[in-house]
Length: 396
Image 1 (spheres, one colour):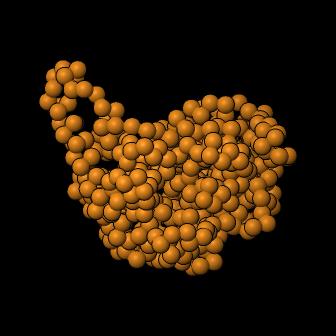
Image 2: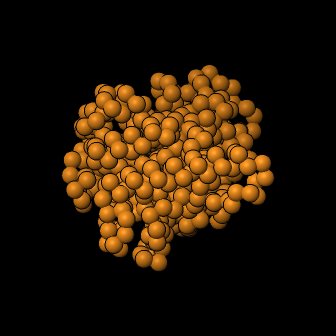
Image 3: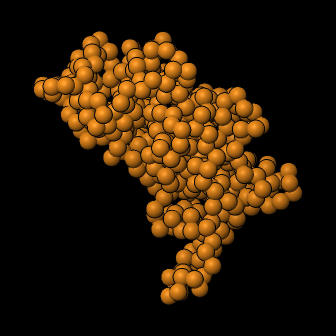
């Protein structure tokens, strides 16, 4: 694999203050970062003078590949509406790697995304984190195979199953079904522990997946907009001693004290969107600065295709317009989502040993006229000299 020396750019490590210096890339990893570094013989020099180098941005909640661009109903694979409890599902099995949104998102400087099932079901299935460099096999894009178990509160499961005349039709029903299923998973785990012969307990794949949540191997990823739904999600997580991340958190600023006290991270968005239902009437970019002041850990998300993942940095820039500091906004699309998803040992900042996921910007990414000059994923370089969808030329 090619070795690169990125020279003269203003480096934004995120984990430390920006500076003008050198980044060395070798074997897909960041080998060195600093001001006075010897460029090794044979490394290709990438001139970054007058430009800004950022880590690849991270979108912590999308449906990329589950609802491919331009396919309509035929490509709609993100909600399994045949039953409200489906923990056995995995987003991986529905992702279409040729979704045009992957190269567009990559060309926007976003190199990692979490892909989650939709919010039709009380338990919708397992989430996954991918790199956005398009590959023929989805498995070649995987960064983290099990990033959480999707659950949903509020209007969506009520509407989907209420229209079918099935439970849940109320918020009471949603909470009850979730509690009952979690309790069954606890009993299933205990029965397995007590049985010396594993064949004595019939394997239930859905219970196995919830067991990963109960054991702390992966968190609940809870779709919740309204403050009361957020509070219900937290109560249930505490009852079963589970890790939980709140997805969307439209009203999160209203109960920022509770979120901070319980150390519950939130993925906020989509905010640049139409107020399509009652749950999102109080959406505001100001909520991010309020969460920051309350010391709530948060990330900014697109919820693609609700709003495009490719313009994620613009959503962060709008948060700055409404009071969030620039530093916090950058962290909200880099290091904070990486920490929340426990992938910060590999991505989210420019540090020695991390994956070489880097983007050279011609101007500040919060400026709507700025664009990347090139993007790098795992040390492979795309110079973005043409239409990245039609000319996916990677130098490795």
